[in-house]
Length: 260
Image (cartoon, rainbow, N blue to C red; front, side):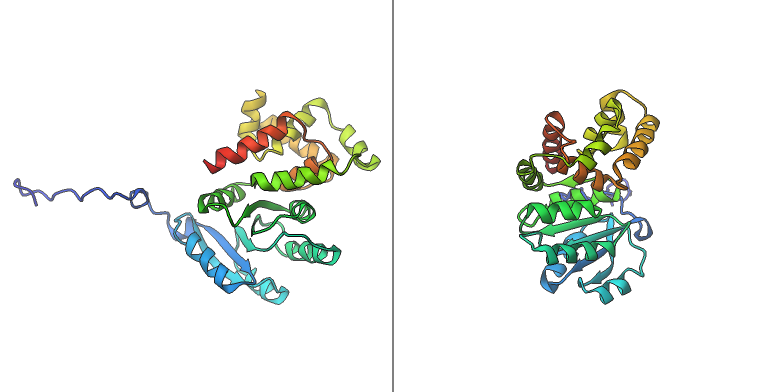
């Protein structure tokens, strides 16, 4: 109470997160936490639960039976601890089968190693974000937010790994080149920008067109290239040299901007 008999205002907290409006639990994005190492799952759980825009609703190992049970819950995002290091054909097939459980839910993978083939496989099967464990927690949380919004956010090291694989692939197959040649100049331009992980609104602003036009062109692009998600489009774009020059620089800039 002050001298006028009024209640004194509470002292301002030095921590910005205490000033924010708490999001009701039913409005938070529901996360499935998946991984075979219980200690690291516990670490991720603590990290996610410090944010008021996510909540863990299920937790599982990567074993099929456990996943089927966990996926009975309503899930908005899958956060998976999985190594994307050097893999043989059998291991890549196992990764494909694992990711098939999550379709069409967005997936963010946390890994300590990067193999170009493993990264490309993950992106082709709908993964929206790949984050190295060596990065800061904000990079992971940014990737999670982007995935829920339907965007793709890739670590610069992931792009380097994918592009290094492309450097060893000198030619695009005739079948894929035929698909790419079906794109109009405007569709190709939109596809290149879309591969940077930006939103439809950002594409529209960059190319001075309407969002409705962007959505229309993306539908045509998906049909012509045989992809169904933005992450598949990004993987396709880098693998088959649809993304070149300016767009590649844009991706790196987008990754850096998201991290800062």
